[in-house]
Image 1 (spheres, rainbow, N blue to C red):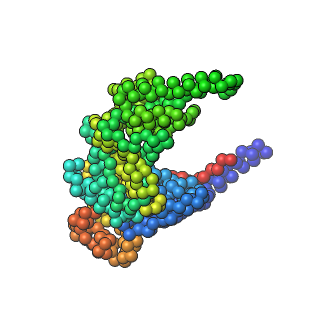
Image 2: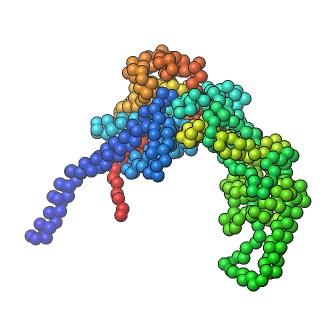
Image 3: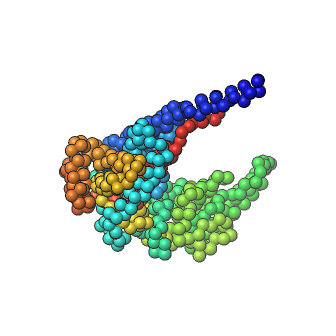
Length: 536
């Protein structure tokens, strides 16, 4: 009898537990993830578009940054919630892929999460929502590609237009007429004809120098060092027909390999040591002079001083211009630009390893001095931009904005299509996806319709940040698109709806497509998470 009872008991218990599964905790975690991620998105929402506000970030070390760039804002924010961190990573990846649209991608993700919250409250399963999002994003990319206008790299005006659109939302927007052509020229000058689709932005070096205004920013065909020429021994500060050597060894007396002390007992020995040092340095400088070299770029040395006062004195006598403490990371860029080889040992110092330039001179700029090398013979495909600014905040922001503009031109080199800006593609997507949702059946149709509604957040925010009436503007915009005006968008300057392509507000196709695919990918990941396990 007892054995019978034992057999029966578990069955009654199991049927009880099977009928009721506690999903409360999973829902709570999903909701808390979505809420925290949305709050991050709301933080950057106000900085979207040409009339967007700027953020002032004060770091723990007391540094102050003023910026409009979504990736920079999120990067500096200390986000602790794991799901909210995903949005920070999202804007970083958009920065890597496209370089621009870092705020857009976060705002879209926030809007999608809001719609997902509504769908989940209605009882739709997260996996269903996630799959529909994926389908919708694929469809969205198709629609965008159909809207895009092809562009040729020879068509410089279009490239400048898209670069200036990217700059318009930045702090330095009033200088976009100067910075946009500058960005286009610098990217086009580093495009390798053998690999036309690849642009390495490391070939564009940005040198920041305080003083002057952003107007004084210039593109230098050559090299600029943010260093002074060594003046200690009165060497030359200007050399024409320069023969330039980049050296990685030290022109100073050798040291012992291990910590040793040499005891000198009388003066004759001391004189001998000094004499040997002098002869050692002189023999090195004679070898250098023999090749006809008259400009030396000396790499920073960790072990011992790269040059001593004595060697500088002899180099000055030999009429050789010296720039010391060149950073190790810059060596590759310098050798590529000068088309020379770095020399790591005095024995290998030969004329064929030198670079040639018409002029090397020290120019005083603002409160400091820079060394300019111009007229380089057989110059590599690199370019240098000298950015100026009245204070450090403007200078840093000008550099970030220029980087965005360079990335936009790089996008156009990679994928030669342009698309309208000003909220036009998002509204068009919203309209076409809404129409597509009506054809579908079941839950998918619901999910895709809400996805379409979420995309309206971009024009809505653009209008809101510009101080217009968002509801009236977006409704009018929908109406225009329904009548077939594909390129109708919000003209923020006039405060009304116009054909945005005619207003020259354009952006690369890659920026929009990557924003949508990355945002949906991130939202799908957040939806799939149903539990957070902390491991101590």
